[in-house]
Image (cartoon, rainbow, N blue to C red; front, side, top):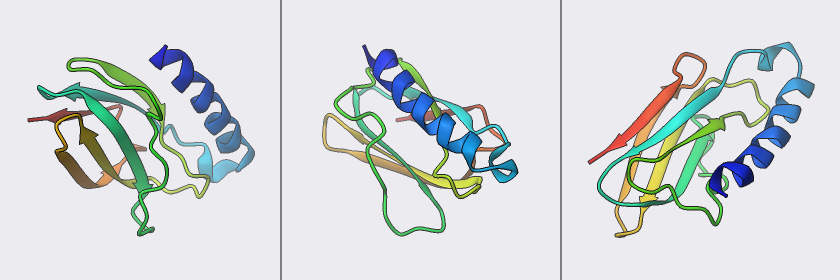
Length: 111
């Protein structure tokens, strides 16, 4: 169910990416891996040029321990630099800034 929900969300994001023109032509597909010992309940990816975390990409879905999900990280601006944040079922959060989604294909959250 997680993949179905996110595939639909990503298809909409991809359509917006294609409509944005050549600045959005770079690949922004990233596999997010939960390599922690706790379920991930929220995941955010926000352009480093913003101060807001935007929307929770997982929505109502949960990324269990050892699971991964493919996401297209694109807010329509053509930006490649993003900050990631995850919230876990135990209340912990993890943040990583300055991730170039045009150059990576996988990002692992670890303990």
